[in-house]
Length: 168
Image: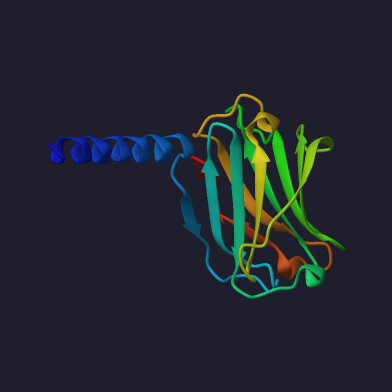
């Protein structure tokens, strides 16, 4: 008699775990070559889209301190499929840590919102952003990540190097 409740409990646990992972969507990891002089040269682009949150994370080839960041990491997203970027995410240092800004429009000048970012490790910065800030967005969004250089053109880096990623 004890086997039936145990088996039922295991089946319910498996269903709950499967439903939870399906809601969050897969964690997508993309690699980029070591091809820039910037200490923020993009190594990995990590994304996840859930029902409530968009997770964006960039990792560099080198360790960096927040206050030593000379450049800004950015994401440009085509959320509506119009072959133009309509949302922009900036990841930049402040005296209190990493900040994440979301802007809209062709150049991202209209601010949608701002949140503190996180440092998952010494080579990464991440943003946990409300999905509502991106309008009607779907997983098939096209995007790119890049280093916005201000001091040296040799510090520029795009991920991917050519074209765009698809699927957040």
